[in-house]
Length: 481
Ligand code: NAI
Image (cartoon, rainbow, N blue to C red; front, top):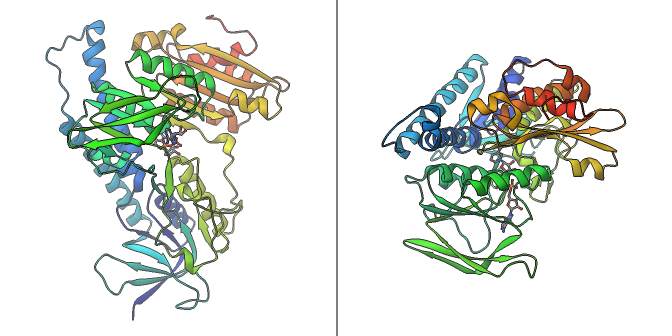
């Protein structure tokens, strides 16, 4: 007979949703546990946000020293890139952060169960479907947890496409790309979304020949069209080949010991003819799918829609005491959103208001060179929603700090309601875009109008002055244009 233990709330999954939600729950006085089958920190810490950004930083530093150092007076002969050293540094960053999470668990008296957690049927140990069995690998008899509430935060995994089966060596998922022990000399990337764009930037910085194949008519199709255009321009300037409106021909795939070749066809007739591309590796970056296999959903009434767990506006599944947050409920799949959703679910569990995170206030960030970050509606979305739209744009070329840093590509664009001057969306491409978007998130949640964004005084010289100028340019009052 398995041992049983009672909790107020148990999280399935210890990623940015699970561990943040658990700390928050503990702070609100709830007896809390996490079940994690791999390591605390989840995809974000071990196979996503943190490792990719660590490698992107290394690659960017290398390119800067190699290609632009001399312009700054930094003359370094014989510069070379040591992939293994970059990987080791990445591992150090991960280890430090992972240690931090373990400390938080201890501090919050949160129990962590290492093993696979499965929801059990209502009949076995409790009258609800909330009981969870935890089976650590190799253990025949696991532990059974009896929680009053469950939060499913099991995350997502890379999706593949028919005919292109990942083998970890030539055909790669983003997980495989992180684990490679070499930098490919050439790479084809299927998918020009966030992951495709970040890896294209990273590998190109390290000298690889990179081709992106994107089914839609532009890179980062979810971003403002002007951003996609600028990204394509800068990527092409950096020597990255961008094939949009293109898909893979499933019959034209040949994976060999020493490389591979793929046939790519244009989606619309007449544009181009089919083309065969060859490379060392292909990265498949066509989206992600929920981790819902083998977590016991069949023992519950929980509904799955289009592959994602369906939840109401309190993050409750069809079993009201079981919540789901983060990637497992579908796009947008963002670590910071997952953490916020987990906190909202916990608030509801603790008898507070809770409620859905407002999508208008969720920033998006792509860590390529150039960086892309945005919040709110694109210009087209705002028009489609019926707003009378005014926009204001300012390039980084007229910003002193951008010139000092040697990164003057890109711009800031405000999308504003012409009637009320409310800011509907802000789109940034260029240096530190992912940091600059933070102040916009605050401004938007405080309902700042474009004039207020323009009135706020930023220090000189900083990149943030471009924010001031872009906001002022909505009404033609910018100075540097
Ligand atoms: P994505 O949904 O962002 O992009 C996938 C792209 O592949 C789309 O543009 C789509 O049109 C294209 N595509 C789909 N099938 C295709 C095909 N057969 N041939 C050519 N193109 C095809 O998905 P991605 O980049 O894989 O990222 C997965 C998730 O992870 C996203 O939701 C993203 O938000 C999240 N993520 C976020 C990061 C960040 O915030 N910096 C970093 C990495 C991932």
